[in-house]
Image (cartoon, rainbow, N blue to C red):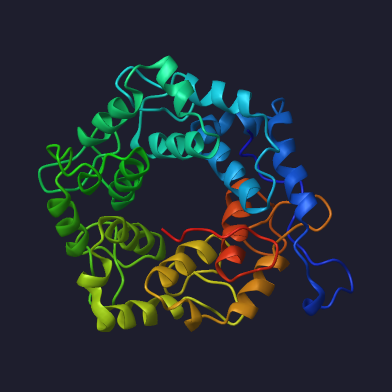
Length: 335
């Protein structure tokens, strides 16, 4: 699947009033299906390091749009398993190093296409080997590295938690077995990333950012510690910081003084949903902003109106619409 932007741009059809904007479902489905036909473009090869991510984003969008079988299952399965390493990790593409992010994407793809039997045929005990790969990336202070080279990020910790949960290998899912990871150390690290403004950063002391808020709140949610840690006061403080990300256009930004971007419809919206504060956003204005970013002619959604569409912003725009209950879109789990 190509991660190249375009060919279309987000815009509103000439003369169409904002109140008449509609999601062009069939065009978005066709746009995602077309992405794997662009292999003769330079951008297809320059974005190889995002290939598994692109498949996950496209497939998720199709599920939300009600077309889960729009991409060929056998082709997806063959490609994903070709990225599997002997140590249980997955790379971004065949021949790429195993990384926790692409392992998480791959497990989500296998979950959506019911591919774990095929995983077992290729690698006996595959789920356990994947879980072991992830567990071996945890550091003594609780955080997780992305790969053998040691970079750490709260994204990686969240990826570890949700992937192990999908595999059924979180400690609370196997209470009779020794825990594979140290959950208390991991959640303590997350809590150390909590800032006085209510948000969370990429590391202790780092600036609050909507994307990192999502990973930290999501990790606490998977661990079952979100409510007990934040409490109502903490949710109010975080909810205030998140709701301030909405600007006059209806769109959301990632941190103060930055431009709006469709992807934050998900990062901000899902975080607010997890703390029961989604109603603090003007959902009608957010819906209008997202629809103004779609290409009504060729499909796809851009980061902002007049910019080129891509599959990354397409899925997060659609996911944002799901959060606010847009009719005809499947329900998404905010965590």
